[in-house]
Each structure stands twice: as C-alpha cells, then as structure tokens.
Length: 496
Image (cartoon, rainbow, N blue to C red; front, side, top):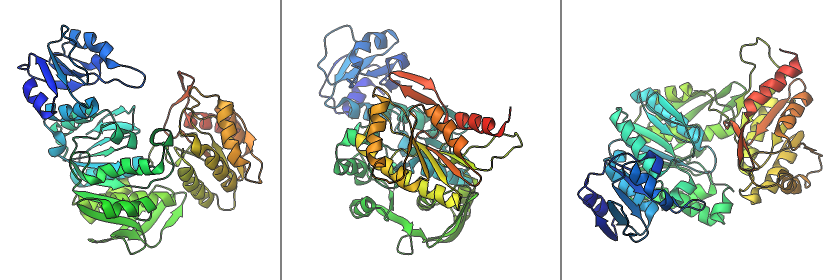
C-alpha cells in the first residue's frame, strides 16, 4: 500500500514528503522498525515516542504518523492525524490487509472470567476446525506457536500483525481478550468481531475509569459498533445487572446465557467436586452434556459463554462438548498445586488463583468452601499498588468473612508502601469479628498458610495466578506462587 493511500485510509489532516513509498508495516515501537515501516509516534503518560523518531528512521522507517505538525526535519514523509492511537489501529489494519475480515474474530470482555472463557472458546474452535489463534492475558498463540503476553490486549499494530499471521497460517477463527483499557486506548479499533462475549462487570480499574458508569460505557463500545463495526453476534451474561442493560442496547444478533431456562443457553443445576464440573446445558440447538475438569460455580458461567460462542461460530454440539472437555486447567485459575511426580500427596489442598477483585475473590472463596467441605479455608491475599484503592477494603472484608484463616500480605506493591496497602485492606478486615494474620512478605505468608493447614483444609493463594514475578518499587523480581507453595509443601511433608 502506498503512503498516499494509507494517509487517505486514516483520514490524515495533512501529509508532507514522499508519499509514493510502499508501506510494508506499521508499528508504534521504534525498535521494531525495518525498511518500509511506518512509525507511529505516541505521546504516552511516561514516554513521548517522538524522541525515538531518529532511531526509527535509522532502522528504515519511511514515514512518521503523529498528532503534531511536521517539524520539517529530515523525515522522508510525515502524516498528521487527529488521534494517533486511532490512526495506529486503522493504519495497521490497512497495512496487514484487514485480517479480521479474513477470519472470524471472537472478542471476550468483562471484569472476571475473560481468560478462562477465551481458552474454552479456543478449545471449541480447535475441536471443530483443528487450528486456531488466541491472544490473551497469559499468552499469544497462532497455531502451535506461542509467546508470553505482556498485556491482556496487545497494542493495535501487534494485534493486526498477529491476526495477519493467523490468517496466513490457515486459521479460520481467532479469540482475543478485550480489556476496557484497550478499548479506551483504541487498541480494539478497526477490528471486525464475528462474536463479542460479555462475562460480567464488577468493581475494578476505577483508578482509570473513575466510575462504574464509565467502566460500563467502555465495555459497551465492543457491542455498539463504536469501534468501527458492530459484532455479528453478541453473547451476554444476563444474570449480571450490567449484562441485562447491555443485552437491551447491543447491536446485531444476541445470545443470552445464565442459570435457568429463561436464557438462550443455560443450565438448571450442576455438580461440583475437586475433580471438576458436570451439567447439562440447554441451547437453541439442543441439550449438551458438559464434563469439565474446571472447578467452581464461576466456571459454569465461563463454560456457558463458550458454548454460546461456539453456537455463534456454527460449531456442532458434539464439537462444543468435546472442546469444553479438552480444555484443561487454565494457568492460575483455581489451579491446584501438586508435588510434581514425587509420589507424595498432601493431606490438604492448595490452589492458586488470579482473583484480584472483590467479586472474583468472593467467587473463588465460595468454590474453596465447597471443595473444603468440613475442612477449613485458609486464604493468602493482597492488593496491587498504584491501582484501584476502592477495592481493597471490600476484598479484606470478603476474605475475612469467607475464610477460616485470612492472611493479608503483599501482591505487587509497585511504588506504594506495602504497609499502607495492607492498612487499606485491614479497614475491611476490621469489619469482621474474626482475627486475621498480617505478614507483609508474600513468601513468608505462603509458608505460614501451608504450615497452618490441617487434613481436609484448602489453602487459597489469591491475586497473582499465572504471574511469575512480583513488582517491588520499579523492580520486577522472579516470584511464582506455584513454586513457593510447592517448596513450602515439600518442607512441611519432609520431602527433599
């Protein structure tokens, strides 16, 4: 595509320089520039990418897209736009041949359940089609090639490039998690969603959105056509109050899901154990017997969402059931910690979960209680620093009221004082009559929980899930809840 065509595609305000060059790629990262690249200079909160223009040109960039007027320096071409993030998405889509129009793209949004729901949908696609692509919180995968994810939703230029790779690899469908931040920062612009899925909306990210109404408005854009085109089918949890509002406002075809028979996809009952879930889902195409290794009531919702998305993608009922059954435990989502072939088994159970909102913590604690039966629930948890403070006290109150032993500790303090974060959490714990334990060092807290556990107890380590690091100040250190818990279990059981 010629630069002149690209400038027209993104509604440029002005353009100067050589516009007859061919644009081979579009990127926001000067380090990724190659001959023929177009560099999009974004002025962020911490870094102004305009200072990297010389490096981009040195690496072969043929043009710069910016909100600023051309500085008349030695830049081959300069394209000025009104909104540089929106322009990045549209330019990347055009440069990559609009890949979301060459495959069926499923977008999953909501506060909780995005990752598991996306993995379930991906498993259904693989069961029915053999290959797929998925982009989410844990990793990005095209076919059998995967890489660790840095953001829940990648930058728009990366999304378009990966979708182009997926289409070229023969994928007919792709699944991606769509965060509210990504929607507001235009990362999900210029994407054609065949299916959009809404899981739920609970308190989170209010440091960014300020109010729940703003948070909901961001999510709603995925279903209204505000991102460029309306989804072909909207799959919505109508047991959620915001989901019911969204079901009324969403454009295009809609599929509702939830408990009971009043929804398009639903279930009346389910059986839960430490080994997984079984239930029968009713759908417009017939009933499906579901067997899953995923544990917890909240996973029933994730499975129902995936079943509905499978129907929207025209998968048959047998492939949908097989896809759900073949989706193994998702990393850090109520994932049991085992001793890896040592032959030993602890008399108590240890689970790691990503729950880092009050609603997610409540859900996972209810599941832990069901698994524990007559045993106790021992919870290790904290809250992230430099993030929404309004959820800290509610998380403390929930942990204190639903646990037999609550141990408050550090999560990712970032640049906040860990003691101050814990103090905010203790404001909620103080509303519960039961005493709690404060251990600021997360490793010490995990060891204490496992030392405390008795036969039949459940130890829940919440907040970090799949993460393999802890952020202290500006430093990121290696820290994996699974590894620490396994080490503590070996010490407790006397295993070398």
